[in-house]
Image 1 (cartoon, rainbow, N blue to C red):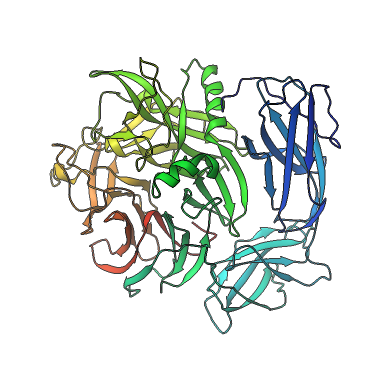
Image 2 (image 1 turned 180 degrees about the vertical axis):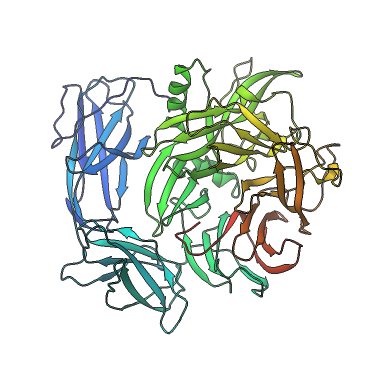
Length: 616
């Protein structure tokens, strides 16, 4: 979907058209729901002068007549919007905007929906959700400046899970409780920051449903001292199966089945507060290609979404509308036009509430070997309303003729898009492209407001001048072979990483990554077993020291993750693509002693050790 600068805003008011040529209807099954209940809104726009006109729709929400509308589902052909208000009761306006190339402007509008509280007698209420392992806890109203949180634990246990505090505002308080064992009775109680406690309630979880296709998983080592028990949950962002979380004893405590099918898209990161950013496929667009080739890489990676613990979509946008918005922004500073193909690998939340994602830019470039279709990466920053505020394109800043891992993409092959857009001189679409950069992670450095991007096919981690959305995008440094850092005399050139994943600074000051070790960055010869690495970067001397470099003993040619466990000082690495359909997660001491290891029979994009499902 390519959109011009002209937007059509269609007013919905009892189905009455504002202009003779356009009629719009917005339908809801009911106008009153309860907190945590899902309301599906359907919008229909028609052009009486062109019945075949196809519209795209944007859905927005705000408290009734208060402030600006917030975009919840940005422009796409889908004319339905599933809204699940889970914070507070109130009266809300749901707006719709429809767009087509054949129509003209009209005025904005909305419909009004009443959301009732679940608490009716001043007593907390526990309700089921669409997730058998997640409950909705609703408490009576409290007032500022007090805050409230909820504690829950298996009956008779002494190791509770505690949600983050939420500020009181005179309305009822509602919390999703996630991280519970199946078919288990829990004791639940809320606490105010003033010291007041609510009554103890009990809740019994359900059974994981059959459509949640959780891979077979097994505990191989541990948990044993000095396992970092401060992080008792292990979250798996699987590919081809349902994402799920276990405790350290390998018991399932949470799952998420994406819209469309269990193998549709993947989770990128958990977000503070208990939500998750994901890249999902459009089931309609992906259906044919996924029927022909079931498995990793068969979808279109159309949507960037945010989900809550119960599995409800909170926000959604598509790469097709962002392509237009990226080009609009680039035009303001004379940047060339881009052609986004799909969302790629990443979605993170910045401290100021902005969201960062990656997308693939497809362009025909004149290489030293001649013209070729090339894939590069664009970093896209969205504001709190999920509108584009900053972009960075690898084509603008990196040498197009440098490639440390020469790789090609063909349509619908693993890691590649389900369709190409660039045309050959004969007018036919390209069927093969150079997968030049293949970025797979973005990290925000709070010390200077920069971004660090992992470019797998360059075997580089690149620090970019983002400067909290005010930077010029210039490269600050490149880490890796033939980059800006030298190795100390004690290190070998073979210590450099290759085809790496998940590059980020940790609280101990070191930069961790998962070294896939695909090929020697010097000779380009095939590599071997994967390594877990932690680097000490001295930006004064520009010396990079591999402080930790542990051979994990497995071959994982793709995906992977790395993290530092602050409590205990251990490291965790995940090798997510062993034997094409197996993942192993390792916890090791800095000297390489294995103290925890878990395995599942699915490709796993990343894994996350968490204190609870609310705190990344």
